Image 1 (tube, protein in one colour):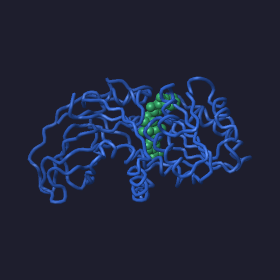
Image 2: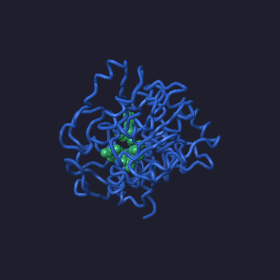
Image 3: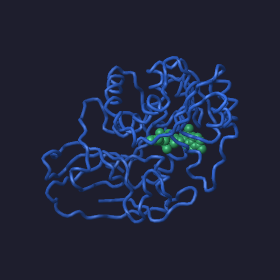
Image 4: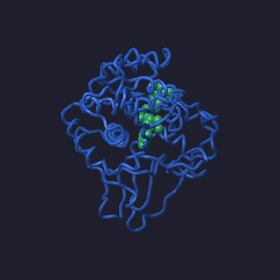
Length: 334
Ligand code: NDP
């Protein structure tokens, strides 16, 4: 099995030298085990946080061990009745082409004709659920709300924008980092307005896109975006703090918003979340998302990088914005 490990902790932007590729030989299957050949690996922004040696909601990656994370593959050998050969499984064993472990570490996924397996790592999986939870349980979005989403062309953002519309938002506004992405937000994802945050101050562009203010802010970016939203939020506005990717590779302490007093004077609610606390909503999400998806209401993009040897590059490219929708590594072909 080819596996990618973290060997040193990055300061600022990670480099390929922080990682190494190793070959691991698995022995015969023990009772209750499966061997799985991965088809797709997920690369996610939260992984950057786990590369630091700091106490957080999940422990740091161990140095010299294989990078863990979401992946989907197929059982090729099994001594576990519940996961027969051929079964498709989701798991968290991460950046490796083959994994062999106890069956308990894998979740059986139904194979549905017309539904690519990769979507189980994106719009129909973790990132779709994140968009749903952030809007519903965290921001308590209501029909008629004007919703602003940062990082709108990414995996979580493309899910959140469409879900906001389907839940009856009056107006959905998104920001992203290129002209192509901005065009896609309005043309493909149903955003009412979108802007490129690199074109000028976010506060000015948001004010122009939301002349009547915003009621909900779904934040993937933090920093300047959060400060701009605090100025644009209407009284009683709500913010789902999902991520703050603008600071993930910063070495110093990022500056806080200068306009926190708006939280008081406008009675705003800012609530952070990590998905781990909301898996109880995955049944509800899956029911509603399946219905929307089958009705053709959900568009998606995937940026797929071929070959496990390009996993580190795929991760870094995603952090730099090379992806539209979900960034994935396809293991098999190279
Ligand atoms: P994305 O698919 O959105 O990929 C990351 C994107 O971030 C890039 O494509 C890039 O797009 C954008 N970006 C990078 N640097 C900056 C910057 N300085 N300013 C603004 N945008 C930037 O990743 P995900 O959808 O997987 O994750 C999105 C966010 O959601 C992240 O903050 C992540 O940590 C968070 N998250 C939180 C979860 C939770 O449980 N709370 C669960 C899953 C994700 P662009 O070209 O637009 O710059």
